[in-house]
Image 1 (spheres, rainbow, N blue to C red):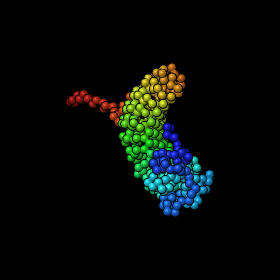
Image 2: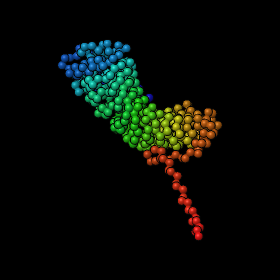
Image 3: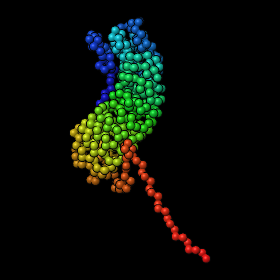
Image 4: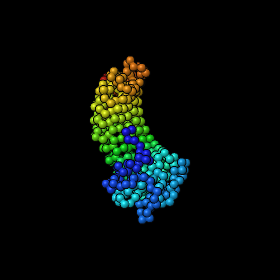
Length: 393
C-alpha cells in the first residue's frame, strides 16, 4: 500500500507536520512531541483530564504481557510509554496529549468511555492488540483526531458512526476485527485520505455514493456480504484515488468502462468476485497502473492489447476466468498469470468441455448502473388452436 503505517516515533512528526504545527511551534527550541519528564502543572486542565482518561484505560487493560503500561503512574502523563505530548494547537503555552501509540502491544481489555477526555488527541494507534467490545461513543469528542488505527483486534458491534462527527479525521483503519452491520454511506462522503475496513463482517451494498469518496486508498477486501455493483460513476474518483482493493467482496457486476478515467490509480484488485462480461479496453487509459488483478471471476473475450501496453504495469493477473485470447505483448509483462482460461496454445487452461459450456451460456448484459441485468424470461408459446370436432348426429 502506498500509505505507510505511522510508528510510535513517527507519530510525533505527524502531529507537528499535519495537525498541530504553527509558526509559534516551529520557532520553539524544544521538540514538540518528545515525551516530557517534567511534572504536569496543577493548573493544566488538559493534562488533568488526560490523566483520568489514561488511568481509566490502564484499569480496563486486563493483560499487559509486555508491561507497556508499567510507567503509567502519577500525573506526569507526558512521560508515559506510548503517550506523546505537544503544545496545544489553540494555546501554545499549554501542553496536551496529542498522541497515543500502543501498536503491537498484545494488550487485552476494553476501551473505556473516559477516552473521550483526550480532546486534543490527533493520532490514536492501537493496532495488533486484543481489545474487545465496541469503540466508545465518547470518541465523538475527539475533534482534532487525524488518524485512528484499531486494526487487528477483537472489536465487535456496528460500524463506529461516531467517527463521522470528527472534522479532521483523515485515516481510518478498522480492518481485521469482528465489526458487523451496515457501513453508513456517509463515510464515503467524508473527506478522508485512507479507508481500511476489510476483514470484518459488514453487510452492505456499494451504491452511487461510493464514488463520492475523496480517499486515495480504499480497501474493502474480504467482505463477502458486501455485494452490489461497481457503479459507473467510479470515474468521478479520478482526482484522488490511487489504490482500490475489492477482492473477495461479493460484488456481481460488469466492470464499467468509466473505470478507465482513473488515470492516477496504481493498484486495482477486483479478484475473487462475480465480475462478468469483457475487460474494458478503457483500462488501457490508466497510465499509472502498476498492479491489476481480475482473477477468479467470470470475465471473457479477448484481453485488450492496450492494457498490456501500459508503461508501468508490473503485475497482471487474470487467471481463472474464461478469456479466449491474449496479445503476445501481455506475456512480456514482468509478472503475468493467465492460467485456467480458454486461451489456445497456453499451458494450464480449462478443459475444452468447460470452455464450450461457457460459450453456450446466455450473453451477459449490464444496465446503466453497471449491474448485471437479469435475463429476460422466454416469450410464452403461441396459443394452440384446435379444429372444432365434427358435429354429432
